[in-house]
Length: 253
Image (cartoon, rainbow, N blue to C red):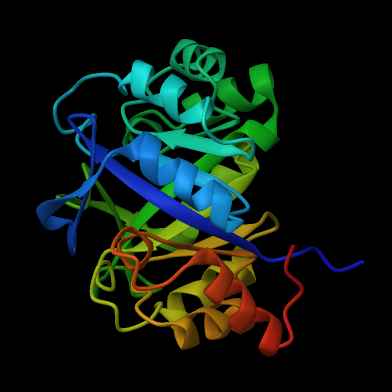
């Protein structure tokens, strides 16, 4: 049986407000996360992803009260990431309404964290968030970054994805830093390579600018498509994206 493709609006949050930039730079205010989450729920979003984009940079925890307020407005899965450093952070986020938790920088610093989270809560709770850039320094041509794309690691993106899955990651959120905010379309090569190495669902992120950008991401191997600014600025609705996917032959909810 085919699994339905998911459409996921993303709320990049800083100081309690939704923000969006290009290539993770020059962030501009997009509105209140609670109000936007409610709007996307009404439009038929399958999930909401809430990323506190400055939590790691500022060396602090995710804003729990905003997470709780958001969770109270939506009755679909809510994934929360940003500043997660321990399984206790995960427990607290789940208690505040999160269904899944995204981990990035802390897992790179201490990969054992992935196993600790998966063993305690199950792989279905653990989303590995990968902020990926093109690079000639790695065998695959893609390198993992941390701190909101500000710092490059020495990790080959595909190698890290494989290791994270082995350690218990139940899903990969693959964000192209190069495509992020450009509205030129998803990085289809990156999606395809991740599909080849992944035994868990792959969420494609970064670059969506028009309805015609979404079906190719699914064709390249994504199980779900994530977008931010096109939804925040009402350039597209969730329903329009689902219609385009349906017209292209994808199964949607």
